Length: 277
Image 1 (cartoon, rainbow, N blue to C red):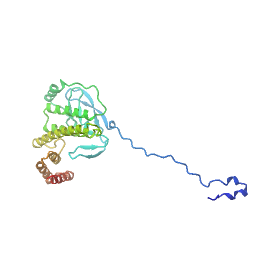
Image 2 (cartoon, rainbow, N blue to C red):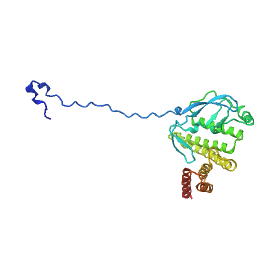
Image 3 (cartoon, helix red, strand yellow):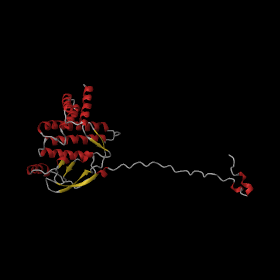
Image 4 (cartoon, rainbow, N blue to C red):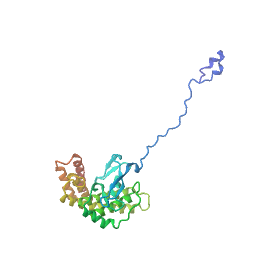
């Protein structure tokens, strides 16, 4: 390459002959894109204080922060899926003093007769919990749901409430299975056991909701008629009872009150039944 300043010598500036017209670009350090921080489960929770309707003691329990987590979808049987957290683990309100446990939807004052049933059958034998974790494992969530179901049976809750608990417990078991280490030697065995447990709870949920549909007023467990019928259709397909599912789907599609979203879901189920028949 020619020297652009080679003629400067006649000006007595020969020492400048080798100057570069442009500075060499500085080597820039490689900038690695920072990975977004994955929120901890604890960030989606708060401790809330409750007044126990059985022992009248104040206690705190962990609940989801309203609007904090982002809904990303749902399973066919309406189990919601959120980013970074499974809210199903936090759906139970449980008193650590007397053992009363209930789905948050049903946390209301109790009659003296029900309080007596809980105290006699639960509280008298309950071992008080002295610590409360900041987050719950699936095992802890499952135990809390079992305690909740025991309370519902003892207090002679409506079939819809017991069915609701079984439904949510099945979701806990599903989440537990999804969290298993697939590389573990006993993965297949554990996954199979959890699936069997999930199916057992779903069958009890199905039976309870069928009974509630005939004997209770809507809304049932927060569901209107079309939503409940969709759920029953879904569970019917799960258990191979396609005739029941078809009746439920026909009712949804013919209902003037069913919304477009439920009707679309019902059409998907109808197509699935057609393919399996």
